[in-house]
Length: 278
Length: 239
Ligand SMILES: Nc1ncnc2c1ncn2[C@@H]1O[C@H](COP(=O)(O)OP(=O)(O)OP(=O)(O)O)[C@@H](O)[C@H]1O
Ligand SMILES: [Mg+2]
Image 1 (cartoon, rainbow over the protein chains, first blue to last red):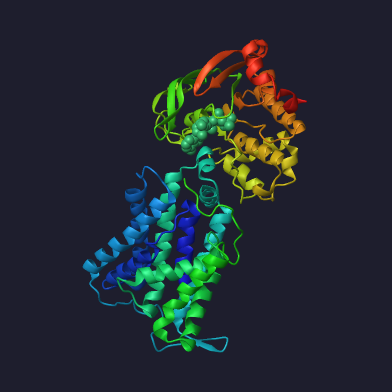
Image 2 (cartoon, chains in turn cyan, purple):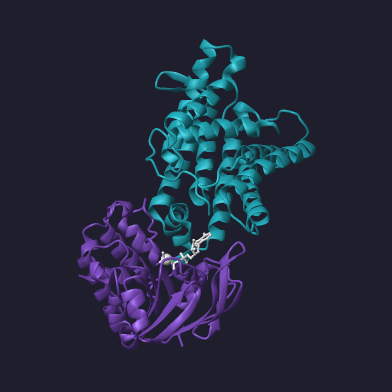
């Protein structure tokens, strides 16, 4: 779960060098929109439409708030994403009120379980893991095998050089926002039956996703998954050691420890410059 | 006239760096721009490439003004800048760098083959990360990446910077060959002797202004140029 949020961070970070603190809101919006649509559409259609809507929403955010920005300094952009996160939560509160909602289980229900390697898993967990796996593989292919994926990496590697070879940096940024919004929304849909959807769920997810992304090393979706699983596991185990009210502390602790000890992640290479002014 | 710059002014913040520069490059020429450190040569090239907004003046490629167009559209005018310090995609492979050079060139496979011919050395290192290449190899890759786009006008910002004498000679030979292949070159250089040797015409820039221009052969014998750029330092660089 955190893995997909972490991947979302990675996509925008890879293309723009920006940490999008509104990433958690994409997850929330995906869930909320799908739940609303599911009241009159079949669930698969609702999920697909919700992902499409949130993808467009992500593109729209970039076009409205980032495209016309005179200085694309990393710090400015990060501050805007924090602002957006707050505004989107407020809007969601007005549109959907503060009730906790959820999508129905994609297959089976709360009671059903699937035996896998001797462990009994809720079918929805399989959906979550399967979705994450497919997303990672497809993304990896996109980044490593396609011209556009490489162009997106080029923008993060050296933005000016990317522009010189003719890569439209503005469009790449829009595409990155759309892609990560869409994936966030997809995550929001598949986890909704288990973790519920709530207008305030974004920031907590963002912090944990960020911890996962940092743990794995920014700019690498595969590592983000490992980071995501690790954060999830540590969180689960920490409940048995410390009171569950402090469960969120675990993610923060990881985040801080990583930032101090290995800022480029467990798998990342030191990049020399960690924050570039563009 | 392939490139025409008229009365160009630009700078950073309120600090004017390029103070009304006019120059032109005709098709088929090698034109070099000389000048001491901090004269504003790189700033001028960045402005021409669209990376630095201009304050006033005009930039025309093929007689069409490109002022206000974003940097990524320059290649549609068949113009390409090889920036100061190479600016490779360091965490991507040599091959990916070449591929991205041809982002807009549908015939990029052929263009990449041509680059292998020009720089056979690169062909053995296609899977290596660009950031791990030696300085000379990086310069070859920077040139190669630009050439995959098949530019008609190539802007080069100090391609010999930081290279050993042998490598410097190789780079200049390569530029001469480019001219034979019909590429027009606008070359910014500190290495005045070598630049004047291959150039047709030259401009000399000082604190943001063009103070001298003429045939390269005439400038070599110009006492002022000799004093400022061919005097001390020349022997260490070239011998
Ligand atoms: N981003 C920047 N912000 C502020 N000032 C800058 C910036 N880039 C360059 N300058 C200033 O502009 C002036 C000209 O720099 P520029 O790089 O154009 O010179 P140059 O002729 O290319 O020098 P060199 O031969 O050393 O490469 C210098 O005084 C430099 O300090
Ligand atoms: Mg310079």
